[in-house]
Length: 187
Picture 1 (cartoon, rainbow, N blue to C red):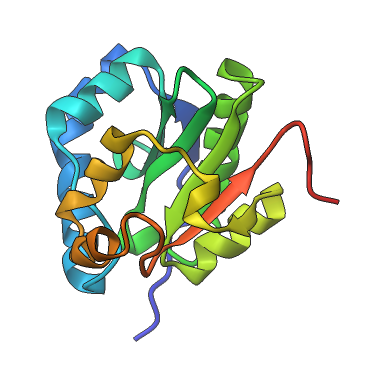
Picture 2: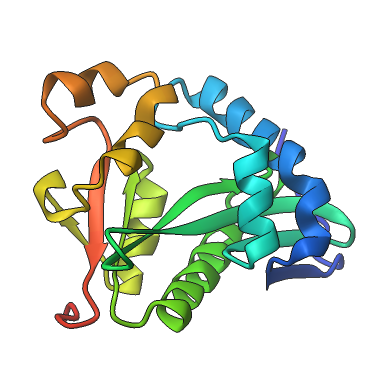
């Protein structure tokens, strides 16, 4: 059976604000469900943390009408030298229609707007996200080129692969690190 999305329904991908706090738990549930289905590479998130990102305008949220269908947030590390785009999630009914790309593009724009000097990075096991990131100018890098902030790496603790990251002293995992340096853009 092929899934079709109602393309007549307006999809909005916007920067978040305090009015979106009520979606924090639903976002976390979407992330947790996706992690269980995939079985790899998605760390769970705390609703209070997500609510903070929503309130501070440090996230992008997507709707089809009034229905929450996607999310991604940004976080800075090492005194704003690095900014990560994290927690990308798309509702299962809206996958494979280009929504993840719209969300990532908006999160990338938000990162550059708020932190123009920061290196933008992310971790992913998703081939689709790697393609989107590559199109945005990210390049695959070793983990040594990413933030050394231990609190960032602690965020991976809820991922099923965290033991790999610990055993390798944060040098590698099943995720691919991707980085976009505004001072050294990819040709």
